[in-house]
Image 1 (cartoon, rainbow, N blue to C red):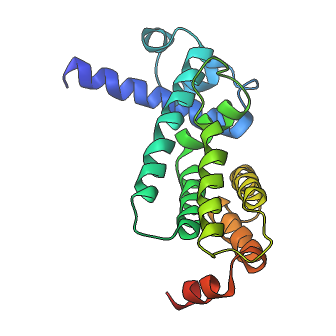
Image 2 (image 1 turned 180 degrees about the horizontal axis):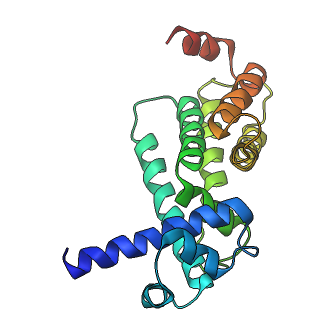
Length: 201
């Protein structure tokens, strides 16, 4: 195996092992020895790629930060109404955090301010959702009197909560929780016409 490819596989093994350990026990509770044991790499190989556990955590934060803009752009390119985009986007975000331990661990680390100096894509969620819900209101997709900014804040908070609660081994996962959130909230905020169209799809 070429040396560069072997190095890439080693780095990936370290990243995944760290994500699994941080996801299981939390950043502070995980010693470097646990990451080495799970990844199957030597301490020397670890320090070839990362200078410390903190640098490894920063790598996880960067990986998850790179993923969210791609997901957002993919949904914004779809020929759907803004409310459908908001719903689908948050469902997909929940699916990513449920299925990809690297994304899940990196997101948890970012929320716990492991990387205070890093550019945060976490903060871009609310403005994006606010724009989608504002456009939904203008298009008549929300019930009269519904505050689109409040809906955006509630939706974002629900997505974060679904991702955190869904990472537990007890109860529904993040996707099921997010879908449940939408089933409950959309009845009170979406227009009857939008709900009828959604059911008929």
